[in-house]
Image (cartoon, rainbow, N blue to C red):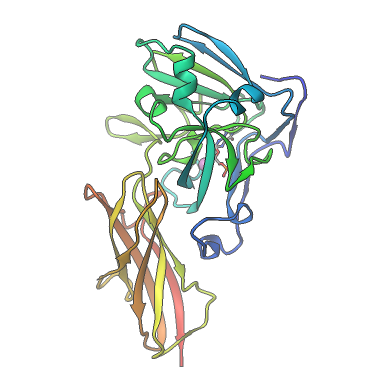
Amino acid sequence: MERAGMQMTKKGFSFRGPDEGVHALKTWITPEDDLFLVTHMGFVEISSEHWYLDIDGLLGNPMRLRLSDLQAMPQREYMSFHECAGSPLAPTVAKRRIGNVVWKGVPLSLVLERAEISSDASYIWTSGLEWGEYAEVQEPYQKDLPVEKALSQEVLLALEINGQPLTPERGGPVRLVVPGWYGTNSVKWVGSITAANRRASGAYTTRFYNDPTPSGGKPVWSVAPESVIVSPSPYDPVLADVPTRIWGWAWGDREISSVEVSVDGGDSWQRATVGQREDRSWQRFELPWTPASGPHLLLCRCTNEIGEGQPPSEARNAVHSVEVQVRN
Ligand SMILES: Nc1nc2c(c(=O)[nH]1)N[C@H]1C(S)=C(S)[C@@H](COP(=O)(O)O)O[C@H]1N2
Ligand SMILES: [Mo]
């Protein structure tokens, strides 16, 4: 995987995110500084001149694209929430690493069409350029997508986030972005794409990011419905008998159709108003609230357009709660 003109920084797993967690996410578009960062084996730095992308496997026209080749192709913008699935070693722990951003790049479908993808291809494998160790595994960061998702218009080889070129930490100069699917699928520092007729067999698609179910592993792909309370936070002063509002974000691969909020620890629920979504953005919800003094456990839960909801606990999309002290 190692390439000329490339080096790695901060070797090993690292996570960075706002100290206040979801309570920092007050704006519709999440600024880069408030957007979480994750890497398993370290960050890659590679100059634009040295970067290239190899495309091979089940296709008629294997090719190597340089950055200037990609820049010369049609690009599109797409707004999407961006969410980390959490640790693959603890897949039922809710981490709530989330943001909402605008990506810009070349649709992967255009590249695959130009490479004359074969009708025998059923999966698209992508690999990052880095090397190193994670959880005692030494393997490239390789992921796969069913070809139907890979060819859908929202999947991009992204060059920009929120109108700015991708930084090295963000996966620049080019990363894959798979809107609607967990962040693990959006391979940073992408260096190769392979069309195949089976799933990728590496650790990042089998051991990690493959939820155990009674009928076998379920790949961590499409994002399940989830919602968080942004405000009030546990640190906000909330005054008794003063009208305020409870608000937050709800998202999922499918559109969210309803959000309910509880101000009494889950004994009773009220329906919040839910805003629209753009592309695959998150949606804002809000409920007016005039609190009585004392402690309150606030919860929110959402349902998507096909009736899927959030489990109360033991899941990456478990119901979120916030404890607030309401004072006189
Ligand atoms: N090459 C590579 N791509 C990667 C990862 C990685 O470790 N290496 N981590 C993945 C995970 S788990 C997540 S959540 C997102 C994080 O993207 P971000 O740092 O831009 O938020 O990148 C994904 N893509
Ligand atoms: Mo992640």
